[in-house]
Image 1 (cartoon, helix red, strand yellow):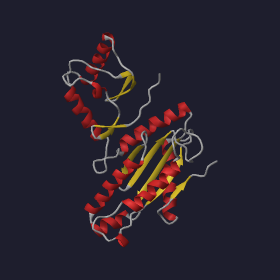
Image 2 (tube, helix red, strand yellow):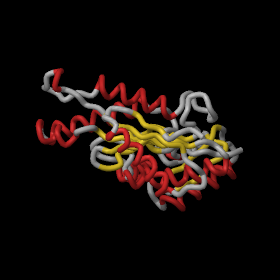
Image 3 (tube, one colour):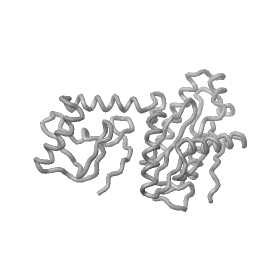
Image 4 (cartoon, one colour):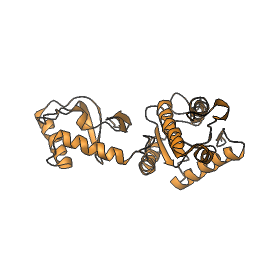
Length: 260
């Protein structure tokens, strides 16, 4: 049985399922509601099932001890929560650049092994400097915070969103074709998700205290599908060029790679 890493919400931040979620707080025993599990960094990813035998319980207790030493379950929870904060952007609550790049590398390898599509969305806020200059950096921060919330509510389970830097954001879409009706097992293609997000930003992200006619927040978006022969840097370069093509073409639009 294979195990796939799927991002979930836990401890109010986006991290993977952990062994801690099914432990006894008294630390008298580890109750695993999983059939198989692997440890990746400080996180434990598992599938459904149940370890019932004493031998298996002892094995997982030893794994926990190896990873966390003499920590209690409470201390281990705090350790994971601290590391979780280290991989998220404090302002938006999205993943940070470092974590996103590592995840993208892993997903590229997974997509190559499974021969599955992998798409990437990159966008930034149009004229964001003008927002800061006209209304102050606190207003700009509020826009970024609201955008982070909107991205979380607009993406799907398994998608990975990050604040890449400043007003630039990226969304990784595993097992997702750029088009709605070609390949992949997800419900919609990357282009459709990007268009929905662009429309949502226009209608929902507002600068507080600013009259409607001056309250215009929009994004320019580039969307690509990864070619398994290309490097990470090449992928970033392609999507970045498409995002700037959207800006040069009038902003507030989505530009995708031509489908071959």
